[in-house]
Image 1 (tube, rainbow, N blue to C red):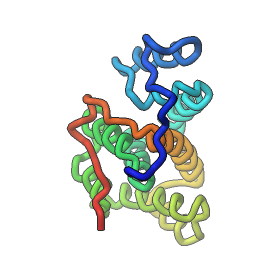
Image 2 (tube, rainbow, N blue to C red; image 1 turned 60 degrees about the horizontal axis):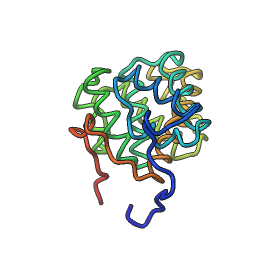
Image 3 (spheres, one colour; image 1 turned 135 degrees about the horizontal axis):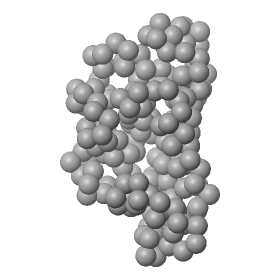
Image 4 (cartoon, one colour; image 1 turned 90 degrees about the vertical axis):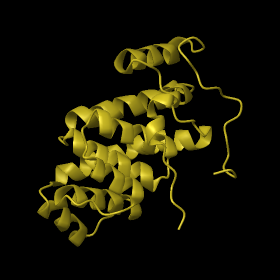
Length: 193
């Protein structure tokens, strides 16, 4: 990560330093979460980016039919694939404290191990396949996913999750976003092989 580009001339915005649309977006985030995550302060520099992220994120959470546990599995698999230390910490924290994901499931994803629960394992595997094959699963990949109880509509939900997490993962990469203190108990670094 030390050789990757870091945005230098665009600061992490706060409610106090933001103006206009960026400020209202950050105020809305604080109302929902009780604080303004650094990731949001980074993305708010381009309000269109932050707005696309937040509306897509909310739509995925509210409309795509996955349980909170399934949502975190998807987000964690994507964030691990993209090696986003910030989103791995944040979604691990959310998994633990809000979505009530069994710790062994979250830790398996964080460590790159198979999940013991068969349905969640199939979800994680299909999400990984969608990333690895750039949205081109084969028939066997899809049938394994369907056999676990998922549908073609669920594939579309995973595509939305991939798009949303790519926005946040990539923004965190170029900002080298430090993990907020609230997520610090779940800091993550990719194990080197």
